[in-house]
Length: 250
Ligand SMILES: NC(=O)c1ccc[n+]([C@@H]2O[C@H](COP(=O)([O-])OP(=O)(O)OC[C@H]3O[C@@H](n4cnc5c(N)ncnc54)[C@H](OP(=O)(O)O)[C@@H]3O)[C@@H](O)[C@H]2O)c1
Image 1 (cartoon, helix red, strand yellow):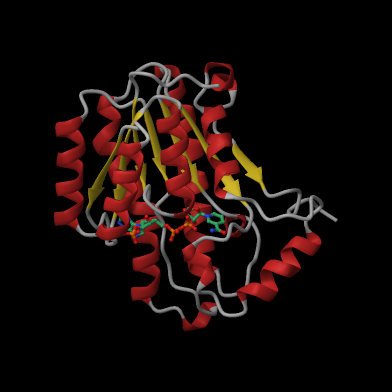
Image 2: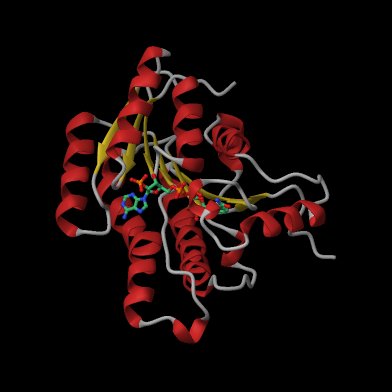
């Protein structure tokens, strides 16, 4: 098991879905986790209380990262709480799901703001607190490299993110800060439960997945924990797919 005692981790979107499992996994390995989220205070407070009862160190920080003022407040809170940061996981994402020609400039800006620009802004703000052994991990999706219906905006933002992280990886590795991405296949979280026809799509995905199963948040968290371990420090600038083999070429 990866030992993260005395380490600080920042997880965006860390109170819900995949990010919540990542926060829990890191905290269970001993890290103090600062879980950032946007809106759902009730959910975040319940998560923090539950974690406290289990003796886990999880501090939730509320702030819409896509707005300058609340972005600044969130960064200030992280800076105040952490002298150093060892792990930075960017899991927060959002986006508009429409056919390409129905996407307005506003839709594209909104999607790229949280899925791409915020990630660069936040990394730039916090990298000064990271040192040798640090980890920066992004969460991308199959839409970053594959065509998915109504996924143009999010897919394009994820493709841009993957390129950004490959450039980060090369630039930061000499400083001992290791950058990678994880790419889960379909995971049943609140984010996708609202998709029209999701049950049929989930059944179809299971059918075409060699393991016959969808990925669950805890499996993504376990992969991230491995990437945080010392033996994984030679994995640099990669996108690790965790999808039960669904994306394998036929
Ligand atoms: N689910 C999938 O099938 C799947 C597959 C591949 C990749 N992914 C990726 O995995 C990551 C997590 O997805 P998920 O399904 O777990 O999503 P989710 O359940 O919707 O959780 C998203 C989290 O991001 C936060 N967030 C959204 N916009 C934000 C903003 N402007 N500022 C701050 N925080 C914001 C949300 O905060 P609130 O709770 O306050 O709203 C929430 O905690 C994403 O990067 C997604 O693209 C998901």
